[in-house]
Image (cartoon, rainbow, N blue to C red):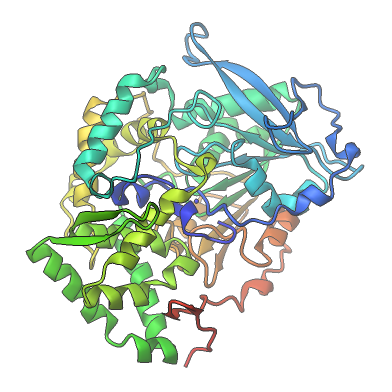
Amino acid sequence: MHPIQTLARPQSGRNGLFRMLSFKGIALAGVALALLCACGSEARKTDNPSPLADCEPGDGPRNALCGWIPVYEDRSAASGRQIDLRVVVYPALSRDRQPDPLFVLAGGPGQGAAQISSLVIGLLGDVRRERDIVFVDQRGTGLSNGLPCDQDTDDLSAFLSDDHAVDTFLNCLEGYEADLRFYTTPLAMDDLDDVRSVLGYERINLWGASYGTRAALVYVRRHGERVRSVVFDGAVPMTMTLPEGFPQDSQRALDLLLEDCEHRAACQERFPDLPRKLDEVLARLDRETKVSSLRHPRTGASVEVTLRSEVVTNTLRLALYSPEAAALVPMLVEQMHGGDFAGLLALAVGAESSPSEVRVNWGMFFSVICAEDLPWVAESVRNLAPAGVFSNDETIEAWDKICSAWPRGEIAADYHEPVVSDVPALVLSGALDPVTPPRRGEELAAGFARALHLVVPGTGHGATGRGCVSKLVAEFVQAGSADDLDTSCVEEFKRPGFFVTPGGPTMERER
């Protein structure tokens, strides 16, 4: 879920519950595809023997190589159904091409890296000068036997109903042509090593975002001798099981936002006493659900929706992924306190307008969550009291229903032990991140003897696209070390100004 941090990207799901609970991939829209003006015919040449060829118009990104690499769905049997993995490679631009490429691991879980390659490549243009950039749709995503589960969100009542969401996912389960036991992260990372081998690379660098950092950790654990360096953006340490920690981390991000509003004169004067007002909004909805008549923000049709407090908290959690979206929160709280929920619903539904290529493949999402996370969620976590305004109760209840029917892959008993490695690592954390906050990055970095943990101020979920950070990533990959990395360029980053009117944010200084 990253560069410009637009609202649509951090969640890319269906209803409030599941939008806020996928690792959220990366905020992808709005990235300037600067590489399109700099790629001549030389860029399409590569020394690696491979099954790749120039991408055909309409079949892949311009100035890249496309192809398919088959793997067995059941890797241990090495027989039966095969999955054709979609691969997209952007060859290095320089004649002094380095032999170790950068492999991109997407978020979600459930986003396909090859499918979003044209949106992400602009972030990694400096790396591409000397290195190939490789994108692979992980099994169950994109064009690698993707497992989507889409719903018509024109029906707002269904859109806001978690019971309806559970039914939708279970209905999709019946239609998949896949053995869902075999769509876990360890098998996908063994696939990735097959791709590395087929493409002729001896060693590789990794860049993973959000869930992609878990995937990178699994690859390092299973194939660490092949890894030259790794970048973790929005760290998900192996010890982290969803949805453990989400309420506390979301509350932290909300508290930071409310404090920042208090310290900025225009926000404080326009929206005084926001914590009290938000508590009163939620308390009213807890006492009595609200039926609200409004125009659908996308279709324009007049609809009636039933609002619960969870609709508010899930949508606020969604907005916190992106500081640009979070800039709307004080104004939305003020509107809701006055009885107007149209802005909040527009925020929630507008996120569903994200391009299809960045949406989560929910079949793969639940194949990961039901095998790798939910079985490890302790009873103590299930019974935790809400952290401020946020709770996991509905999420765990819904996941229990889904996972009770979902085919579950085999995961090693020590899967959630920390990964220990001497591979050079750059760990990026957004200071305002509501799902993978700096404490997660600190925990992941502790296992890497040669790690630098960089906390990026004024940044939410996904840091590579923030200011100079993409250049720091390139410098780290070029050197294969963070020892001499000058990170001072991030010190002046600030949270964007808050919207005090619908016309736009203020750019004032803090008081």
